[in-house]
Length: 146
Image (cartoon, rainbow, N blue to C red; front, side, top):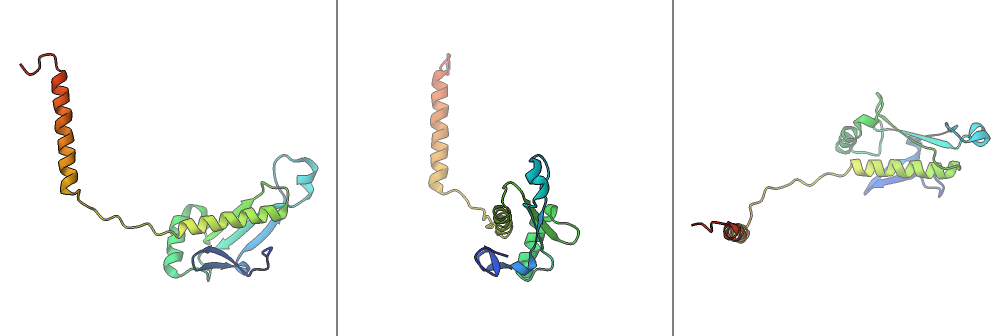
């Protein structure tokens, strides 16, 4: 499946999708393009089932299913189509890169934000600046506090 003879697609640290799980199909391109687009199947469609894959652990599968829910069909399959190039190989590469980026972004676990309190010095600086600003505005008044 891959150009370099690899057996899997690396999508994140320690996560590899076996190429035998990817359903790669060449389909004819739509839209304008004349004779070339009508007779050559250069557009590439890649389908990968998130629910049945061996590449993900259960918590990773749950995360990907949640993050990409709007892009999955009823069976849990993700479909990516690339047709922007005239060459089948370039479209295959583009579709694989898109799959790679999509899955790697979905696997990112966001850091848990811990609530912190400002330091005493930061609070004092903020209040001091507020006081100075207030005094500046007081001095600008026409009556000067009389």
